[in-house]
Image (cartoon, rainbow, N blue to C red; front, side, top):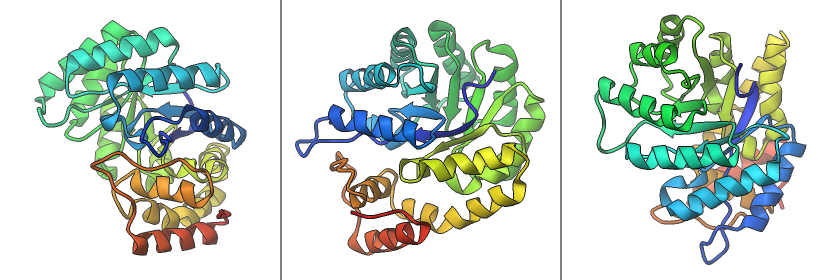
Length: 290
């Protein structure tokens, strides 16, 4: 059974002005997402600035989200690392805390071979015993299929390559053995058309209901309505990725008056020209600014 169907928000990590994690604001965001119809919370992924969180902050934030959501919707914890040992330990801790799934990035910098990736994911999931949704590059369709069919806890993939042909190859090779989620907000409908279960979404931070509806309408067989909403969102999606994620989405939330705070270096604040375009596209989409 899929961890979730629909739109899982790749939630930002709000910061105070001193760059400490703002847990009061995080609780507000979690409640707003649940009220807005989001189908799952993805905490401490790339959008959550996981790369600049200390391990202590990382695990505290995951535990906090699991505790506050309290089983109302699934929580998927980002526990990936370029170190298999680190990812294994964080994944075990997330599972013990009650995470419904884990999000494991393909190792960066010290990139593994396809055999190395198989061992990486197998080692982590056998230890954590919780289903992962995986994201990254250079995962051959045959590697995904091997993991899906041979690693008990490998059940899902977040596909963000942007290559629809590669996605089709994965689904053909897996032959129903993997749950597929779009990792790109501009490809939700195309991924669903290949058998996808939903999306892990940046857009959901600012438009949870609409992102949920794109998936829900498609799964209800209302393809035309789903497609129209997907296309309506494209200019806003492009604005949300006009700079490195999560720079624009944090700017967007601050424009909405959500006060999610600054970013940790090496991320910097959004350029004024890009922010102007972002604000305009948000208004066109019907999002109220502060």
